[in-house]
Length: 444
Image (cartoon, rainbow, N blue to C red; front, side, top):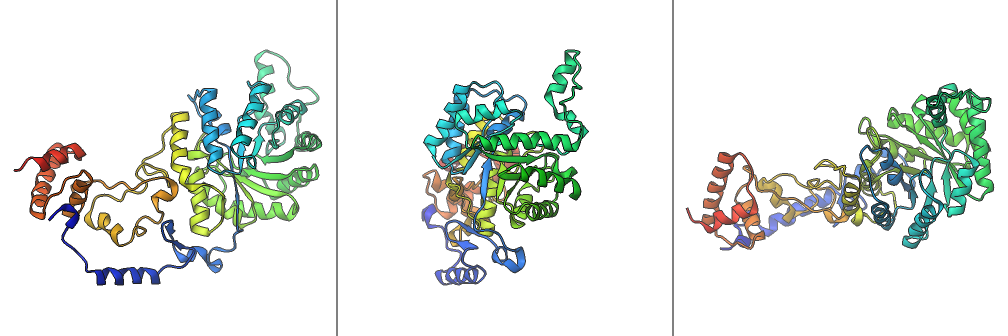
């Protein structure tokens, strides 16, 4: 009897009954064969509330990696990553800022995106002056970001010219430096209006929103929406906003400026970035800014892959992402930055679809592949990992040997299993495929 002819555990009739029982626990949409199987409760509006049919995911990886210490990527490496990123179907990309880059490089970047996907919107961040806006417009960007600090005088902490002047021993306290909240908003509003005059869409990140009061937020929204902001994006750098707080701030923003889109940029301090994204979109946000592998300074952003699959699989919200490219994109991000994710990183981790080597775990996929794995690995370009461990039984070992082209009968598999367990116990490690093959070739 070969390894492919393992002794049957269940009869065909039993397996049919198992599958029929599973079908009764599933519902269309929440269960899509070959894609996912999630709780039907996720699709009930009386349980999770109403969500829109689609959401825009705006990727800010190229800007975010600038905050990662030790990342020194060549222009060619960044261009290759950008091409893969746009090819994944993200509808919007935030590039690196203008600093240190010439006009030709900016134009080449926009051209690369449009050649890969003409419909992908290219966003230039960190607009500080009309001259910055002019450069972005000349390069062909679709939109710019005018970042607005959350404070009044305390916003001086985040003004780079202050530090440059102070270091040179120069006086920076000139009359045109915004020293209160009204001045901060006035300066930003002028820049928003100017960018709109240049024909650009203007995304306004409202920074440090975890420090916003309802009163200060109302002032910001009123001024910036009035200046022509296309979108107000709630940036939570500290990651101090709960999903419920984010939802509340989105509802408040929409009530104050119903004709302006609302976005968010959550950070992952408490592991809730994706949860914040879902709560905000449920409350009326239309765009989520995130990054591949969650790259950013500190605790990082919401992860592109995890966020896309949360919306697509759990809630049935379309993202337009080509999910089968997500794992490849995650690996490309690791190559670009040198920062590697955990083995069990959601969706794209090397062992995100590994549940160990127990026989009942490894054999369940023959009955239904979407039991412990609620996502099909191929959906995201990933694969199942099926290890042979000290807890593995003869069925798992027989499958492992078969994958190596080795066929053995039950008695031989039992013998190999005993010797493999003895070797693992003696050396305190798992065995390689080569060692398993060697044990199979060498009788006791």
